[in-house]
Image 1 (cartoon, rainbow, N blue to C red):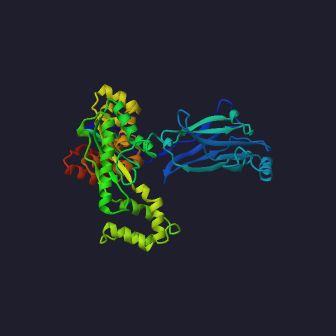
Image 2 (tube, rainbow, N blue to C red; image 1 turned 120 degrees about the horizontal axis):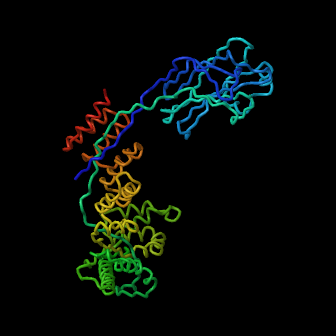
Length: 488
């Protein structure tokens, strides 16, 4: 079952703005002798840069010898939320020009300025250009000229004169990609919990003694888990399996008998402790000698502790030697190290692994919405999907449920595809690309990749992905039509 979602994508195109004639700047506070004109106002975008250029006509501007006038183009959005100052043009009188050379430029302008001396009572034109990194908000923004007519550096006293648009609104091609989410199939919520308990038995005995040594603490690893499960009405225990391991010392046949009976003894203890159906308890299993655990322990030890570590590993790995001769060989060749292993490693090899298989019950939609708030891991992927559908698509709540679905089921390709589609709707290509690396090769995954490639302007890759989706039975006509229009 699939669902198609619609979204518009805006495509930025290169633009150019040019003034049609001179712009005369006369603010409310401006006097006749402080008027300037701007000619050849032009804005363009080249190589990810925004260029602003113009000519300042200073014919009507008068500047006293010891003063200056400052003109600073300011880029800003119409709502004023974004603003960027460009290079300032400082027009100085003769004395002020000398003072700037001697004492430095006014701190307000020192970082980015162009300075010119006003030629007294003469026609004067100054060419101005500044370049800044292109930003998305430049589209549709405006250029204002901040005119410091008092030469005091106080922007509050400055005139603000409108120059013109920075760049027109981005040209938009109305594109409605065909997003295809994956509706998960209903499924059983069967889980397996694994653990290890180090139960101590009397030497050569297998009777379960709960109060012997640290057994009470080790048994609680199993019983605490079962207590929690029994107390939760949403959980039903399906199977309990115990596997016993013995260490390699003593004859193999003896260890086999001990390990098997000890696993049975622990299984019987759990059976007698809980009122569970007999079918829940799997037959006890055992491994007579835990050579796997011994090898792991030896491999992690240093040669300072075990000088013949490499030689002992080779003996352990030699499958041509049977267990009893293998142990005797280590004991004979490296007695000191064998003694160390016997004392420090062998006790940990005698363990009881337990596996508890349980299942969460199915929930109604209303129940699932409540369970989601505190125990979302009890919900199936389909139940999480159904909860998400109770919120407006694209809302924060909807997106959060879909993210939770992937958190609970990190290996799910369905959850990865659906979350990738959310990222694509938000034009978050980095997140979408990461998710789609683990989304498999289904038609829905290929369709999502095609939309990703369209957003990245990788049109050949997009077409290839759409063809793969088509080969798996998906109707790709809508997205292919979009792709063909973009490639023209």
